[in-house]
Amino acid sequence: MSDDLLTTYTATITFDRYDEIRDALFDTNLSRSFDKRSYQAGNIRDGVVSISHGSVHRARRRVENTQFRPDVLRLYERDLFPQVMRDLFDVVIEGEEADLYAVGELVSVVLASRRAGIEYDPSSIDELRELVHAVDVFSQGSAILDAKDPDAVRDLVRATYESFERDFVRPAWERREALIERVERGDLSREDLPHDILTVLLLHRGDAQLELGDDGRVVREVATYLQGGTHTSGQTLVNAIDLIFSTESSIEATLARLTDDVGFAQRVVHETLRLRPTTPKIKRRAEADTSITGRLIPKDALVVLDAATANKDARYFGAAPERFDPDRTVADSVPRWGLSFGAGAHQCPGRSVAGGFPVPDDFEVGDEHVFGLVALMLQEVARRGVRPDPEHPPERDLRTERFTRWRRYPVRFTGARSVTAPA
Image (cartoon, one colour):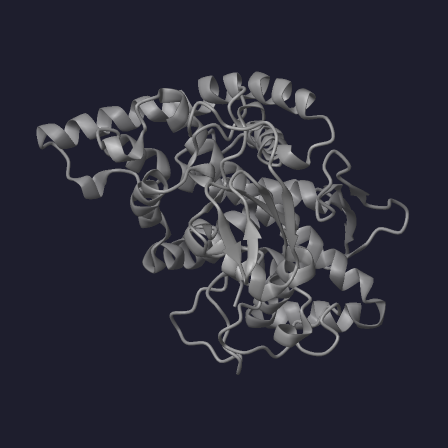
């Protein structure tokens, strides 16, 4: 980012139609870089891939996208995640009552840590909870444009970042550097290295296009993938259950279908993301004068893309688009999750991890299909008999204006453990 970024904007322009927002997301004149106060004053987003622009962004995505290949996704979904998920659920669901959001984040952070390159003691629930705490803080930092108290968020991010780097990133970094040195000496092949974001960043630090010379930028990049992989999955799991519980007439039938059909579980996740996007209003800054569907946007304007409204566009999502309907029929060209993963250069790299591959209009998928890890989590909590907790109402996260975020979601489980492996 340049040294003279703005703290004010020439205009604020909002779009809320599906086609307009898609055009905006593909417009290379609109960037995710904002102002120094929000992003460079000690915040977790300073210089990371999600707000970089142009050649730096393309170069980083080129090397980081190797961690999201279909074969890697299938390995995680079919071999690595299911047993880890079930074992961890057995530990963290200690009785009939539980906080579903806390459970979801603890399970999600395991895989997110592995993909990011963070190491922890697998026998220590306390270390997992430390990572979840860091994720919660970094999530506030990533949503700082919507924060109600940005100064408090920045202070909290700085304090948390120091211990996160010291306790989790640096030990993993040192081990990977030692392995990379062995590769350079010929003692190991590259295939013997860990397959994670931290490793590929260290391997490519010499590439000037990536702008990774600053150690802090590497740490923040790793934190971005940890935060994104954990927070989005945990919130989506809760929002899916909340939408099911809100449709009182079909709770039992829906949960029964989830138990038996992972394909249906994936469609529930996609419909949840459509109605409850993790980022309801996507924000961009105009790097230059541009226009969207004929509407002029001046340089340095703040562009607000109301994805929550656009995802209810009846022209794309049919009759009653505001209704929760996992069996909704849409055209194959329209993602079932709407615009919730973005589009264009900044489309979420982890969309297939959380949401799986797109589901065709006829719902028929082949053996190579990836259902997404949130679908597996959703199916698991359904198998364990998740039900509303009438004595303890859920609590939304009021630290941000994003209406899709929760702080607590108490539920009850009528079955102690899963007895059936995921489909």
